[in-house]
Figure 1 (spheres, rainbow, N blue to C red):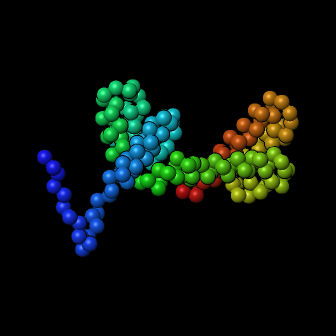
Figure 2: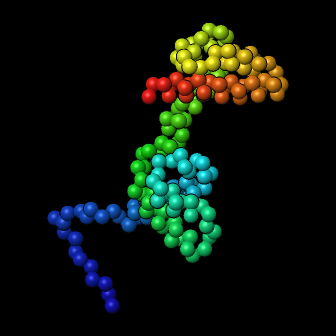
Figure 3: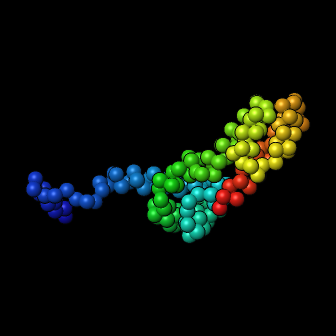
Length: 173
């Protein structure tokens, strides 16, 4: 039986419904985003701005093996991810979160202190007065050396800087 088609007049208003190919592309992008999130390690998934229900569904998707119920799990996860704040989610996946900025700042301070001297340590202590100046100075001096001792000192220095910065930020609250 032939399909009935409606003649389109120029006066007809365009439909608010998306074109099928656009919808298909959007769903494919959403599936790719959901699968990308599911492939992340658990700690990174927890840092994303997703509600508990979405997190649980993505955890279930990440744990499931390819089988018929995985398709349903993926469909549900896609719907939940679609409801999330897409801008915040994209920023978090790109590493543009406040935590990432703070981490980058402490790495910058560490590099500046190791390359510089007491003046740079004093600049850090001026910004973060709760920081342990002596521990920073000791670790910076050791980090300027060579070998495994310098590597461990570099890690300790970063930890000391983070503690000092966190203590100063905690006092502001």
